Length: 321
Image (cartoon, rainbow, N blue to C red; front, side, top):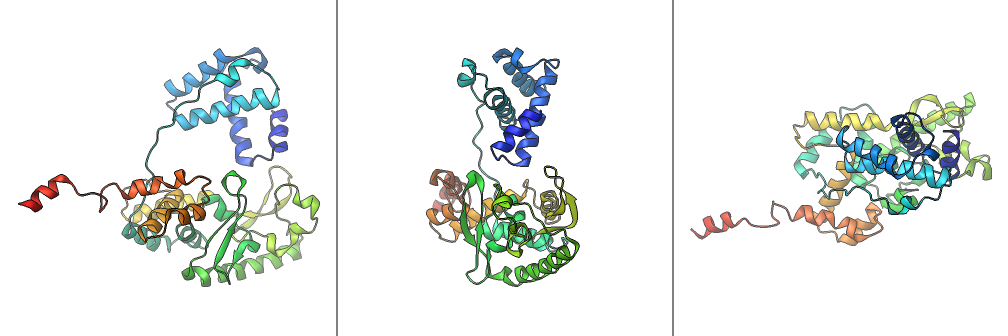
């Protein structure tokens, strides 16, 4: 497991990916009686994946996640060249339409979200108002908030890409207040000697003072200090993403929304409502950070289903009468 961790960190994978891969590799080894991976091959991998599908009833995406972890173990950690690795077929992922809230449902959810403790309510509004992913919002740095230009620069988004998205005018005052509070915490952290913040890609080595600078601090930092699981340093991390997930679900239930609602639902709703407002697909693609416009084309499909997209032949028949 130490070799797996070292290889994951060498490749600059995220902590969540590290924990996920470690967990799946452990399950794979335990499933086969703690045999060493070099003693196993395609038959053992297929047996484990079959167990996940038939006994544990996991989804195709979860099954593929387990396969990715196992292939990482063989290819990158053990450096084993096995012919079956290249030909191993992944489970087909079903293509589903995203869950999208109507404008009225979104208004009701945001109203209920105002009851959440700060800054959770502000983050929920940002997710819908900017189209950011949950982790992009909680990892937002002070230097990437452009109040004058009303922009937010999303750094190291999905696929390692940067992009620019909008900062809603209605949230400017709330963002200024959040930054003012965050500045107070920063001064306290300086006084206590706990101002260091985690920096990506060894920037802490290249710029030794950057981790203490105001611009690199998280906008939505946690109230309490925590121990970094990798460096073991005690410092202030960003707010826990699970808090936002819980309050989004809570607000949706309070608003009487029957659809399964998560923070990512707000991103889907942002894209759909932008298209409904008349913005072109390329603009929405850039705001979402999609590499291929085909990914963004899922939202016009949502617009074409029901509503004003098509007229039922039943309605046409009754109108003719």
